[in-house]
Image (cartoon, rainbow, N blue to C red):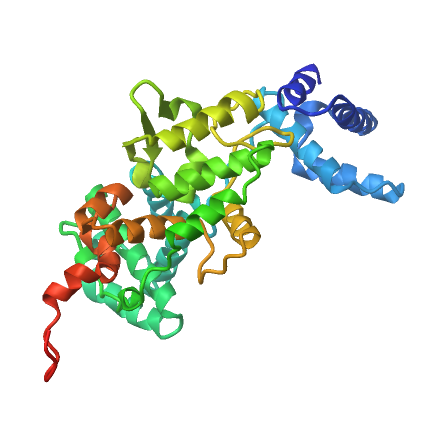
Length: 390
């Protein structure tokens, strides 16, 4: 209990709020004594029993109380008092092969949990489709099996999901080649779903609209200054939302004027720190960021003080800022500012290789989307219209 109380203090909870949490835990302790249980016996099932008994006495647990109990159980497991539960695999990973695939995606490829969940779902469907006649040996998978499943899947789902199926199967083939189950990499043999994303122009804001977006942040408050810094980083460096979430205090090299970006696939890349971004970061860290134990650069400003749990938090900051600035672009996520940076760079005379380097694209095809914005370059390759003089 003392360790948990100290943790509440470090996370910035007010004294009265922390006292209410400890009173609830004292009630939990008395319930354990009546049940002849100890702290080591606590788990999610025991907490549910405690909640049901409280409801029978017309004292149901509220949302904050439930969160307190879950938080306390996590604390007990962290200090070794309560046993750690067996980790649950995403969705329906049952076989040893599927478990190894999940581990490969997480450790070797650095894939995020949501993508792992989606890939595993498609691979499980493929294995169920291919194993109708018995146990399947990975070495017996052929290109025709993969393509037959893609064609069947494409008839039942939309184009976007079919593309995900192709990506999952290609990653699965690379995994089997990595393990030595396949002599040849079959990932290139999987059918390609037509990609129509290059038929539209990238959605972006004008430079004046970006300035309007930044001006609506009230930098006289902690929340406004934090959000201004996040928006400025997105607009000047073109970072992804997840890269903002993972940024730590140690990633800013003040002497060298650089910032380390934790990108896709566990990559770490150094980028120059613009002067205005560095000034906003320094103001955020020295004046507005509350003291806490986490090393995350951007954190919640209400207890518990900890980093953002999901990249959607950054996108919601962008959406709220767009609404306050009375801007209504077709897309409203954090990626909008990434598109804007690339588009405005091309309109000012930048080249596609410069855009690819700034956005840290691995493949030139990813940058090809912005080619249609470079009107000067397109005029040099556009054929003359019959009967019209240049």
